[in-house]
Amino acid sequence: MSETDLPVPSVPNARDAVRALRPSQIREVANAGFGVADVLPFWFGESDRVTPAFIRDAASAALAAGATFYTHNLGIAPLRAALASYVSELHGATSSDHIAVTSAGVNALMLAAQLVVGAGDRVVAVTPLWPNLVEIPKILGAHVETVALGYGERGWQLDLEQLLTALTPDTKMLLINSPNNPTGWVMSREEQRAVLAHCRRYGIWIVADEVYERLYYADAEPGADSTHSRTAPSFLDLATRDERVICVNSFSKAWLMTGWRLGWIVAPASLMDDLGKLVEYNTSCAPAFVQQAGIAAVQQGERFAQELVLDLKASRDHLVRALSTVPGVDVKAPPGAMYVFFSMPGASSSLELCKAMVREVGLGVAPGSAFGPQGEGFVRWCYACDTARLDAGVERLKRFLAQYGTH
Image 1 (tube, rainbow, N blue to C red):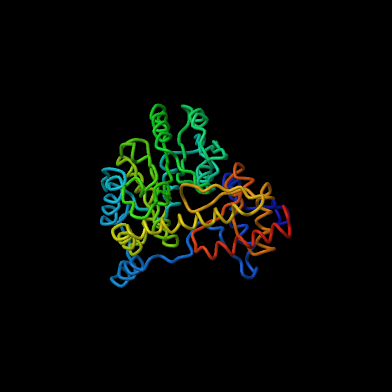
Image 2 (image 1 turned 120 degrees about the vertical axis):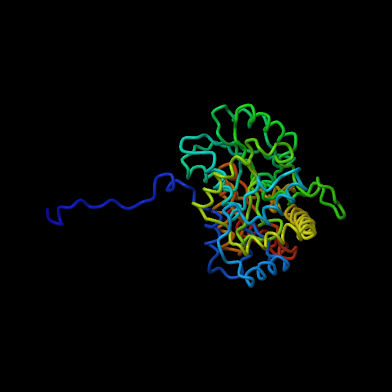
């Protein structure tokens, strides 16, 4: 057989489940901003402030001391102990046997999914939702169904009966993100109690993404020192540590450590050996010097976290007031997270609208469609910055609407 008779090889592609994943529309809008002068970026979920000095100093000291080697798959013992104390203070007795350190919160979500779901499993997620949570189970071949929050005079609300109906006996896992990205919705203690009882009845795993738990404003007032005001309602407040509940958290939000890529999991002790294997086959371990910075965050960072919440609440209130003066904008103050998720003229095609705002007035916000079909009609604005920057953004929004209408 000559070379001309050989079959033409097919185009090399990733497997179908990966090719079917949604690309990030937030990144698509941000990419549209490259090359545009003086863009005000409110599209990503992070503060414009750097990580506090006491955390950076701890990492520098650890590097200087030579903390550059592999560590235990589940994290160094001092960090696991510090996290156990931190979780115990907020949510009740928790031991290091229930703690695993991960290379970021999103890595923790992937590990949690890998622990309990596989090809063909049914997963339910409450949306609108950060797309990573919806897409991760799909990478594993699971089927994801969604239950949408509703929007009305009280902002974003859960139809509890609709969710319970969706949690059928053949459901393997429920994904809940509260406080929620993008809406800022917070699941109430009563809703959590009902969902937990239902999932216990049918043996459904709950994976709770609680990375925004400290960014909770219901009781955020100067001088407040009760546990209730320090954290949003958590499934850890209700569940025992050895039932089908996995809570995922991150150092990114409460201590402004987005670029450090450090998170943790609270899970049944019976999962830890298998979780260690998964960590080994994913990342092996989080960097030792970053874990030392994590110890500083949880042991020294409480005052910082509480002050950050007060600052964010002030920024939230400032932005909501400013947006409320813009004709056609419908905005409600959310009880948690660091975003307002609001409707405005033209948001029925939110991706194109957001690209146009970047192009025409240098305003960068995230399209609601990035968070699933249920988010279409809205845009997300991260308010983790100073109020002068927020005011400049609102002025650009007004200019865009005056010049281009619904575009």
